[in-house]
Each structure stands twice: as C-alpha cells, then as structure tokens.
Amino acid sequence: MSFISERASQIKPSATLSLTAKAQVLKDQGRPVISFAAGEPDFDSPDVVKNAGRAAIDAGHTKYAPVAGYPELRNAVVADFENASGVKRSPDEVIVSCGAKHVLYNLIQATVNPGDKVVYASPYWVSYPSMVELAGGESVVIETQSKDHFRLDPKVLDKTLEETGAKVVIINSPQNPTGVVYSPDDIDAIVATCARRKVLLISDEIYGRLIYCETPHRSAMAMDSPEVREHVIVVNGRLAYWLCPGSKGHH
Image (cartoon, rainbow, N blue to C red; front, side, top):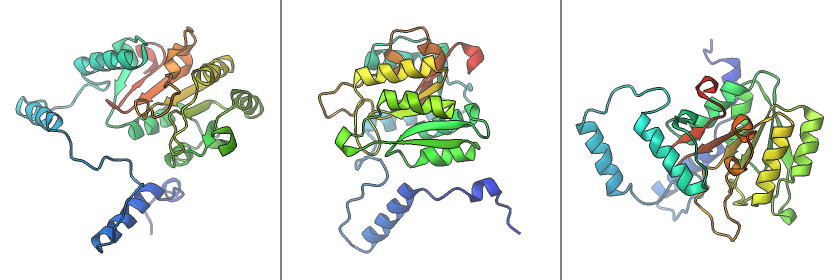
C-alpha cells in the first residue's frame, strides 16, 4: 500500500535537480562538466555572511521568528526595495520567507482554488506548472517566440484573460530561462491589464539585479496607480521577501 497522495504522485521530479544530480555523477567520474542546471554561484558564501550568521547564533537569535519576519528585517526589506526600484512601501506590506521558491508556492496555495486558471508565458521556470497543479489550478500557457525576443505581448495577455477568465497571472522579468527583460512600457501595460481585469499579478523579480542589456529592470510595483497595491504581488529573493497587496488583513 502506498502512503503517497494522488496529488503528490502526479507531480514530476524537478528537471533542474535531475540535471544537477547527473552533472555531479559525471564530475565524480572525473569528467569535465560545466553545469547550467541549478542556479547557484560557483564560489563560497562571503565571509561577511558567514560571520553575520555566527554572530546571530551567538546572540541567541535561534527562536521562532514572527510569521511575517522580524520588524528590523522587514524595515530593511522596505529600504532595499526602495533603493532598487524607487518604490516606497510599508513594512506592513512585507512578508519574509525562507526563499523565493517557497514564497511562490505559498502564494499559489493561498490564492488558487481548484479549477482556477493561472496564466504565464512560455518558456517558463520549470516549477510554475507543478505549483499550480498542486493547488488544483489549471495552467494557461502563452507561447512566445524567439523572433519576438520571447516578449509577452500585453494585448495577447488581455485576450487570453478575456477568453479564459483566469484569476492569476505570473510574470518573470528578467526571465528564466530566456534572460529576456520586459520593457518598462510592457510591464506597465501588463499591470494595467491585470488591474482592469481584476486579476492578481504575481511578479517574480528574483533576477531583478542581474541586468546585462540596455533595457532597465522595471518592477511591477513601480507603476503609479492606486490599483497596483490591490492587484500586484512582488516576489524577490535578495532577502527572500514578498510585497503583498493591501493592509495587514490581506496577508
């Protein structure tokens, strides 16, 4: 008898981790391998990070933290986000977690009901479909083309939302795996479309500081509109936080 739930048994193993494991096997065999699988640096953690971790343990910061994160950390997130994007938010709009992947999973579990449709562009990060499936949702994938620089056309998104009645849209800029950076105009158009359609927009901005082109990164939270606070959630991994809509009651 299997104790694995039907829901869990339907999820495919992570392609990223499978490739990482295969690369490690080849390395152990002495093969010269350069792995482009798991997104992690090829250098050790900086000493300043190690020392800060040791200092925190020595100071007794080893207990349960507040659900939303320590106030000092949430204030630091607000300052960091304002410095990076020019957008000022309140600590009450910040929740700290243990990683962007965990944040995205929690977000989808918290917002997607069985049968709800979630829209995102292809190519996409491999974990989006599994997260949606685990929540009982349905993925609606918009295909993009290399000739268009893998651009998610806001007009195509608008038509897709009209046809599907989707509840959630996920965008990722700069995008994994293509590296495309959405233009500021496209970001604003996508935000405006989601607000007009009353759709929740999850903006996965994990790579927001890794820009190697002339197009600047534009946070989905940067659009000057009161509707942004109610329809946009920003996920970032610099400090593993997310900025949620509304006040404490929406957390």
